[in-house]
Image (cartoon, rainbow, N blue to C red; front, side, top):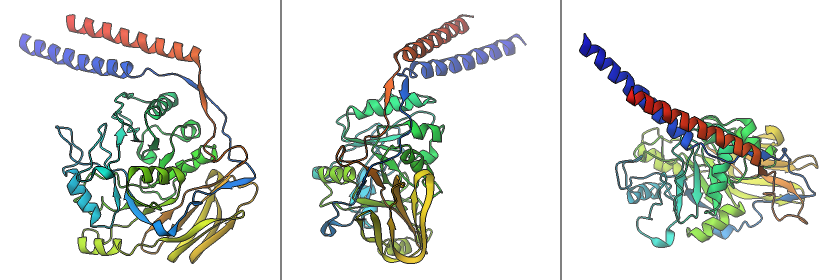
Length: 400
């Protein structure tokens, strides 16, 4: 009986110690500035920003996936296939650009240094708050294990922006704790990852756009299983870019001349059918701005095409057509186009947005944030006290 009791005490102390160590890790990684945020400021101005102003049909369109995982050296792997094998798998579907965005690691291009793109997925936190960091020469490994507060998420974006060219906000639909209120405040990313779940609405994008936070959109596979037909070549992007070099990719992604797409899993396991379906995708033929009217024409008829604007409102909706035109009204802060096709393909365009060309060259200068020094001191002091209290309790538990 004494042995059983002693064993139970050891188990209880071990469990309590592990729990306390986890809390210590959470508190230790919770340090952050606390910010005050500007009020939402919808896009306004006499001019309309046209992301397709540099469209050159000689370079259109190159198919790309930017969120790709592969096997890496070491024991922590999210994919069983090496970069060269993953690249070959995408090439069979007609992809021209594939970048490797492994977690907290810069992956070397498998065969051509000229195609190297320094990009990694940042984040190992419990809420899956992840970002793609482009153009950094090193990995920033700091993360909040429990990024519950908006200011923690903002701090990560600010920190990553210091050593990168641009940032993509990853899979908001699958990020725990993300809310409309947070999307209306957060800034510091240039690209929103679209279609990151079952929904094609991208409403979270409209939450941010309606608050005045402009971003372009990319849809990616977030590939982990290239051997599963339902996981590969089901999201993609089409860029108007002269090459797959990083310099050309960077200019295109920051210029906005591209569109994103959801692609059905043709054949649902029949790989021959999947390859065939991917060779004949609907596409954008023309897109742009004529005066105050946005327009788009497609390679084939869509079931429906809609224009979405401020607060996720539908500004125009047409059916059974291969094109659409919409005259933006003075009160239309922005407009983006979505086309739905009979077989399940969906095309998403980048947003056209109001701005003042005499003051800004793009609408990225939206609401910002500043550090509240008093709240920052108080918050971090509280975190320090919680850490020290937990550490003292751990020592007491071990000694008891």
